[in-house]
Length: 168
Image (cartoon, rainbow, N blue to C red; front, side):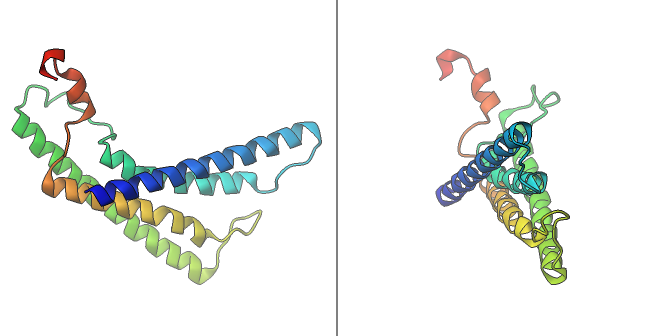
């Protein structure tokens, strides 16, 4: 699991760099548009593409940290073993969904490569966006699958917060 965590952190750092770059690009474009009339053509296309890739690249770290939303209204009175089983089942569902998304995104990327489709303003190749999306989704699927099989190394963040101070 340590290798998967390192890869997930690397994906999150890459996503952060991507978001920083598109933020800077947007600032330059907006300031230029409002001061000199100069703008970056297609900035919204690049922002959308980079944001989609960044979201997918954040998914593995979110899965490692058990950061997805958990609705535990019905399980608050369940035993620890029951909650662990449900958490592992939930991780399996996440693994299947992320795997499905990765597979279909890979097929979409291959289709975009074959047809050489591009964005409307810049003609930016769509297959490049898929190259940024697929690895994050696939890694999130692998991490969730490992968690479903082996369980979790540490309790969920809300479980730690709910523990009495003396128990920690």
